[in-house]
Image 1 (tube, rainbow, N blue to C red):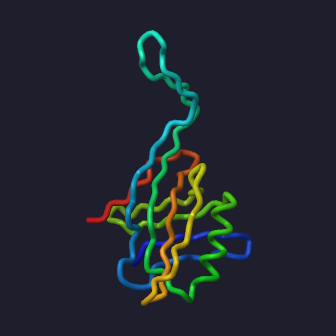
Image 2: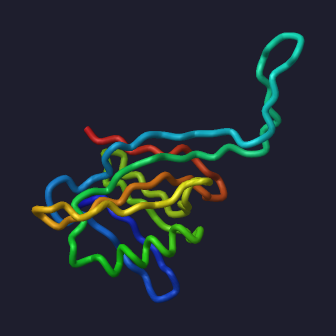
Length: 142
């Protein structure tokens, strides 16, 4: 099995999966963040925040994407960077699947230059979990 990204941009369901080598999300970095107005108290110097919501996010890289999948990769970039929903299947030791992901505010999903030898691509992104009962995004490989 391998980690994957699935999406439906209106033209049908599509999946992006690494073809060889490292078939998992690399550089997984949790990015939980409370959203709301912050202020520093003048009298005590403490930070205060009126929390409206909590975004559970993560930054990651998905390497080893075949050059032959370029059309699907372009469709995904358009879909994700316009705020479309997609699914991250981590294929980690906890079998985590997040089916309501969107790009994190102020970011874009990006595609690397192709590797000069293998012509494979790497996707890089930061996402938030937009599920109704959102939970932290975890990816644990052992």
